[in-house]
Image (cartoon, rainbow, N blue to C red; front, side):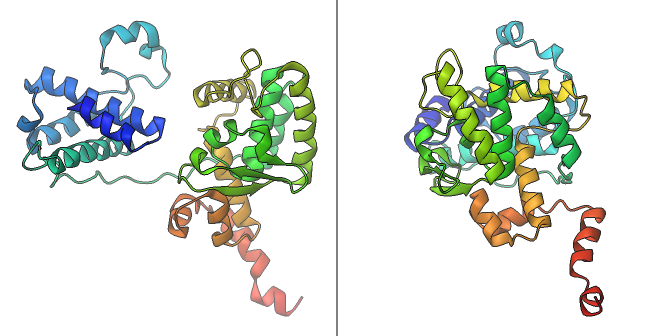
Length: 322
């Protein structure tokens, strides 16, 4: 049934990462059902199984369960720094969401009478503010990059574009040369490459344009590729997972002790735009969100210091008696 469900998802042209998330969550659940509950058939899954699985997820550590034990010899989960750490409520809720979609599909396909997920609710979760890179930290990170090395120069430009345009990492790595308009200092992101499947335009500043033009000239000397950020030896677009691995190494190099990922560059862009006075409607369009509410929920991580600085700009008394 998982195989049939994945065929259905493929027919809907869901994103590869969405497909992978569904398949991993469902197969992990199937392994647990078989080993812990002796259940192999979808019509025998009950609400109680789901709730016991939630308890199992809450008590076991990260990466301690897998679909195929043989993969542990390849992936070496025990070498991860967060191995056996607590599985977050956010991760559990993602699993539950994937199970809910699966069982809803089974119910609508009349493979089961009732979904066991009907009364299962998401776990409450406290949202932690995202880590923010200060101006000085950004400068130190940029300065640490070696422009004489192809992959570091490439990765530096990816950072600058994400920080200046607010694009997602996957969108940035998929950019082809023809999408870049140096005259207008803009990049056209086609619908098939964006998360919301809507075409949008993003923009970059003059300083970024200067660096980007230099990178293009450098890239063309060493790699014949239609992609803006290719792998040197193949000319293919760099994969998200490979860039994330490189990014972690750059952070370790400068001893930045924060929970920062490439996606934080997009968060930094959004917060800096808000702090500079950009209205949230414009920001929402640039980020490619489906609604302003999504933008509000995702990017209003303002600290007391942020609010104090913003207030100082708009103080009525200061304005009247200046």
